[in-house]
Image 1 (cartoon, rainbow, N blue to C red):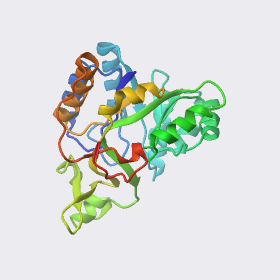
Image 2: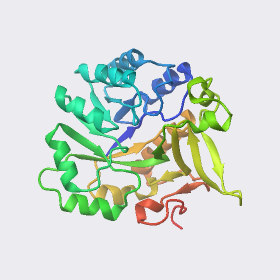
Image 3: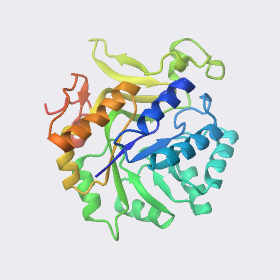
Length: 291
């Protein structure tokens, strides 16, 4: 079973991004996803920078590099950037909406369906495979039981299956920017507020329990999703790849080391109390791991 590092969901300073990927290049990850998936206004790195970084990482690491697209396309400029990703032939595309699927299919560019693409049944997956899909990332709200049904009823050779296994789950996207709104700023003049809040902002209930995390236009789970203790089950189900979603550079590298430690010694680093695995077992998403 391979290990991937998903695209950075938060807005990090340019040098922090470059330093992070220099470390990931030396990690146990097999696949690295690069690109902005949340907000087109986040331009610490533009599309040329991402492409140059992809080339550098591919050369120095030998890992598979995949370019990731926006999950919510709102302007013609977003389409133009997406077209530029699809015009290159060096790297697969992670398509996070159906416009990206269409462009990749037209260009005959191999693509991965990201977790924002609603693939809930074998027929949908088979249709996308006909259009050039090579891998799908299971939507985060689906369970192990749902995955079993998908695998058992697939009409043909199953494409690679990737499961989001660690990190705050991307649950929803909105045309509104929650981070800007929280600071009474208009979206079009936000001052890049999320750059100063680059691990998101917790949203708590009146009782003080963390419910969600807001990240620009994105709503994330309040707790960190963690399926790492269930790696044997994932592998037994036919999962090809597990995804580590970057949180902080140190935390992400620790999660990668955690997987490596398990594969070598069957041991895990202790987890904090704000973690969950509820969707995987068909329960409420906020359920605490192994509760």
